[in-house]
Length: 117
Image (cartoon, rainbow, N blue to C red; front, top):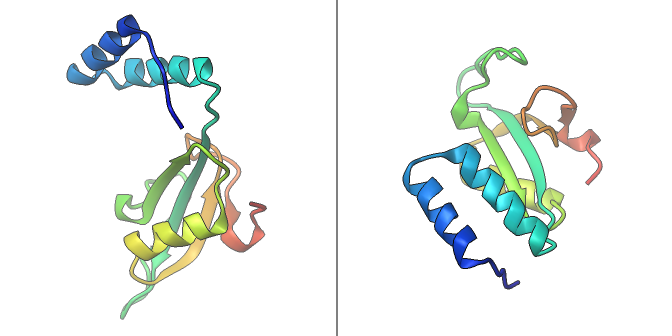
């Protein structure tokens, strides 16, 4: 897929990235996506790693460990195979795998086997 943008938008994107303005980078990306008919798909993934000891107790909304969290974004529909790839590269022995399409990760959590891809 080729993406086209104006020079002005390109310069604005570079400036925002250099200054670390994530909000502006995302706003510009949305503009670029819209003008190029790009649709993005998002899935928030969380899991616990089972090891020689019991997994760390975790309560939803109380700070899930960063090393057991992944935000997957693609320009095509996300599949179970995509989630499996994330888990195989980021988790050691994942259990209680949950996903939500909510970017904030606040609502809509499903156990992986109950989620409809």
